[in-house]
Amino acid sequence: MVSIFIFLILFLFYQYSGILQTEELVSTPPVKGIEYVEAIFVNNLLNYLQYLFFPVAPALIIKDDILLSVPIAQSAINFGVIQTLKNLFPHGFLEIPNILCFQFLSITMFYQLFFKGWKTLVPTFMKLRKVYLASLLVILIAAIVEGVF
Image (cartoon, rainbow, N blue to C red; front, side):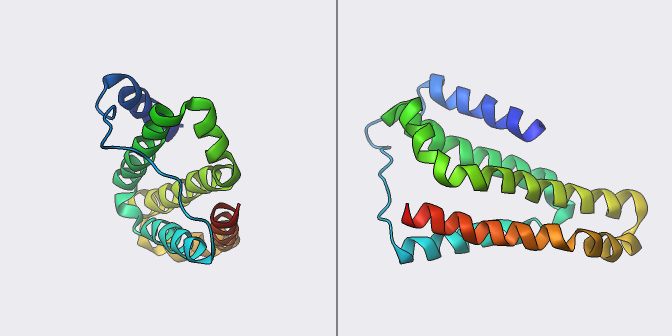
């Protein structure tokens, strides 16, 4: 919930501050295809793997919010909010809930480490392993959807 709030604040700031309103910053649609699918998958996989460094989870959440809000705000400025939402929907439908899942997993492990001790990490990971694997599968599906459609 905090992540969504931070994202909305940043989005509104970029949208109305004028910072991104320059002709030099123009978002261009990517070229779809297998190379784009691979690039998206690798990028999303690296994002997924960084959440294994759960002691820095709060910083990663803020970083993700900043990195997501800038291009979305830029697209909204260039193409309008409706077109931006249309472009985001096919893959954002999978990726945004998955990002929230990454954050949940990371914060859960963060909590286990700092409030229950490091000995609880492996049992907690084992309990959540199906969620980790499902999240990884969603990354692959989202990359295919975004890269092809």
